[in-house]
Amino acid sequence: MPDPAIVPSTNEPVILIIDDDAEIRYSLTRVLSSRKWRVVEAPSGEQGISIVKNDPPDLIFLDLRMGGMSGIETLQHIRSANPKQMVVLMTAFGTAQTAIEAMKYGAFDYIMKPFDSQKVLTIAETALQARADIRAASGYKSVLNSEDYKEGIVGSSLVMQDVFKVIGQVTASDVTVMITGESGTGKELVARSIWKHSHRSSKPFIAVNCAAIPDNLIESELFGHEKGSFTGATAQRIGKFELCDGGTIFLDEIGDMALATQTKILRVLQQGEVQRVGGVDTIAVDVRILAATNKDLEEMVKAKTFREDLYYRLNVVRIRMPALRDRSEDIPPIVDFSLQNLVKQKKARVSKVSPEAMAVLVRYRWPGNVRELENVIYRSAVLAQGDTILLKHLPTEVREAVGAVSPPPLAMAVPPSSNDVAPKEALPNSSPVVTDHVQAAAVTHTVAEPALTVSRALDFLQAELSRGPTPILERLEREMIERVLVSEGGNQLRAAEKLGITRATLRKRIDEWGLKV
Image (tube, rainbow, N blue to C red; front, side, top):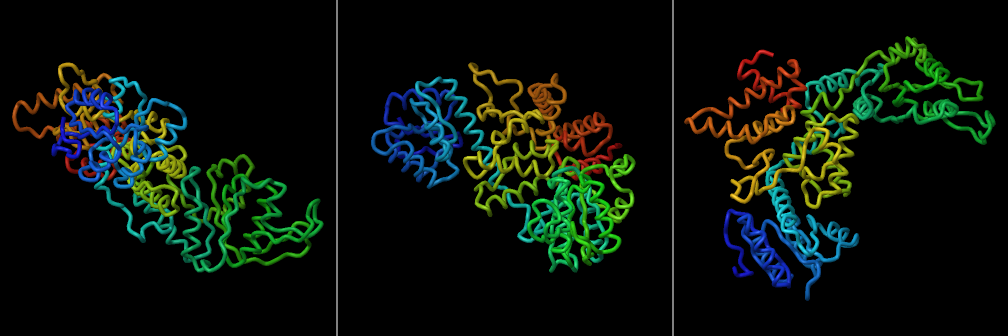
């Protein structure tokens, strides 16, 4: 038995067992050693902490109830010394309190006694894979500088560059701007950016959600009312247009505004004056109007549900916000921006996303756009035990939508023994003949064509390499790109999404190889 105070130097994963029961340590050592992992034992929490401080193992199995220092106390000390340490708690009491405490103090998972050997191996493989993912993400550097995206609008794609250009062009004037796009694309952020860079930036900016205010109250909200003008009007009220005098008012979801109110908005635009509900005097106001909608106003005009004259008054300049699925290359910086905000607000401590999780985020279609992405990042950050969001932390519906499953076990990265049969779908992350791009392409192609398993793809690679030196990776990557481009009818955006690469990378490959699209 190895000295419990020393973790032998090895490139193989090292697993530490901390338990005061010698029989448990012996049984676990036999099970874990069957995978040829290096196993180290510690009979107490104190000795386990000493090992962790001197030479941290890759994974720890820790008994919850021990004589002397308890498992929870030991876990707290271990996580304090190394917040990234992977720990699996062992317990004979599978209560809700046990699970909650285990997760609360940062355990990766917990396992019930008596043990099922396969369950132990599965948890160990999953934890070691998660550890490998975290190490892969450890080289991650923030893609944002301190001054980048201070407007809150994140993105450097071509479509977003067009948006930024129009914002810059309209800030110097008081022209009315219509901002269109799907819900959650960031239309209010565009409006705030226009106001912030305009000569009205020292005056108020007021946002009004027209869809959230009942029709019988919106006129009072916008234009104010006189005392006694209607039941409940016990005092005079100043409307938003008066309060915003000299500034900018943003009418969000203007397509939901009643026709009667649309008429009064038109009067403000034409004559620069408002009249309170129940009042007789007109009040001059100097307000710039920005409007937004996710509805088709042109169709509403045809259907007579939106005033044509108001439409043309509002639609002097139009800014179309693209859907997130149409600018997938902006997803990594948006994720980065969201994580930075969560850390600043002290809502989470996560600062990184594993490559596997990021690939899923880039491939997902995001029907709720940026708002949905921010929500997913928040949810995943809350569930992450360490400082990295892993694939398993993403919502099930997101992973299933792109055909993503949990990462293959780390044990599958080495040739299986005669007693172990690797599943054909397991793609070795550490395979020396598969690069990140090719791996992503192979996985995508397997999802698209189930008959072609990754195992068969690797057999082909091995056969090609056995023939001598050959640029097999370039050949495979080119073949994958050509096939996906054909299957997507030459649509580069959809092809890039399916391949799991950015559109810029795809265009670069097309130019390098002179592909005809």
